[in-house]
Length: 53
Image 1: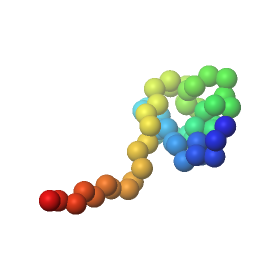
Image 2: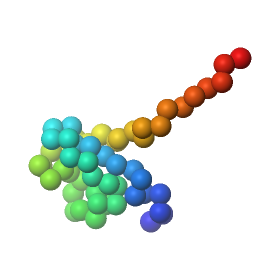
Image 3: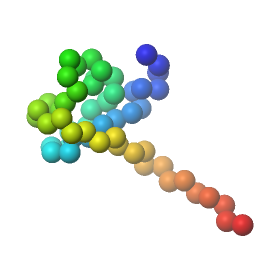
Image 4: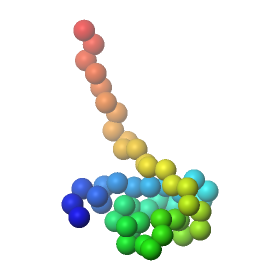
């Protein structure tokens, strides 16, 4: 497993709990602690700036 996986987080759609990819891979099923199976990937807070021409 690579070192970059710890920067990837998923958020439960129902309760909002954030879980890292490493924790998800260690579980037997991919689901939240509340039992819901729908997770979305959390996007980084950085904003891309593009230079105008």
